[in-house]
Amino acid sequence: MIIHSDETADIPTPSGLMRLHIFRPATEGRFPGIVLFSEIYQVTAPIRRLAVMMAGQGYVVCVPEVYHEYEAAGTVLAYDRPGTDRGNFLKYEKPLASYDHDARAALDWLAASPHCTGALATMGVCLGGHLAFRAAFDARVRAGVCFYATDIHSRTLGHGQQVAGRQMIREALENAGSRYEWHEFNAQHAFLRDEGHRFDPDLFVLGMEMTRRFLERALHISA
Image (tube, rainbow, N blue to C red; front, top):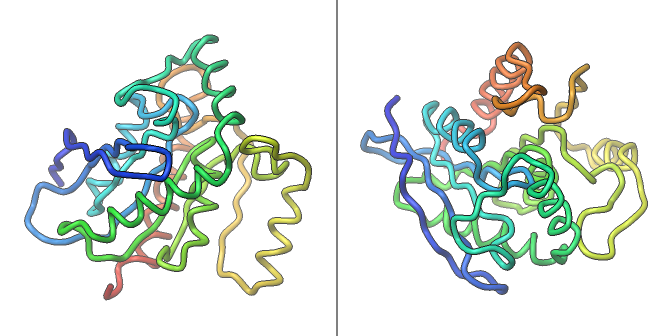
């Protein structure tokens, strides 16, 4: 499926304008929507390619710039030591409530898009995996896909956060009777990033196929 991949929208949040990068099918019609949260480097080339892949399967995908309060619109941090240090610093510097406000704003925008059916999901990798998990608590979200979500097991995301554990998350899901899938891979962190030495093509294909089947079950029903 051919897509549009060069659209952006600057939307209001309580902490200022946030840029969304939009990827959507080029054909007429309305499609389920995905808020795709990036890793700590913001909207890099691998994140754009991941968004393209999802949009090409029949989704409207919006990717927010997670550090919009601290970096100029369009900023991409490099996959090097200075970029990693900056991304990790901002990950903890930004208040947790601001991440949540941003997620709601992105979901609001996507739900109101004329290209979206209103069926919503979240997805993310690294920092974005954690943000996708948090955003999935919004009642409008039908499914969340979280790859190697950092800090979710230690409750260390956001300014002043600390302690807890991954097992607590799983036990809470069980106790709530949630419908979920839990997969663990023998792989390096960032194995989906198709750039650099950590990329695992076999697991990338497997992960994308699992994501495709999961989201089809959750979203391809009447909105």
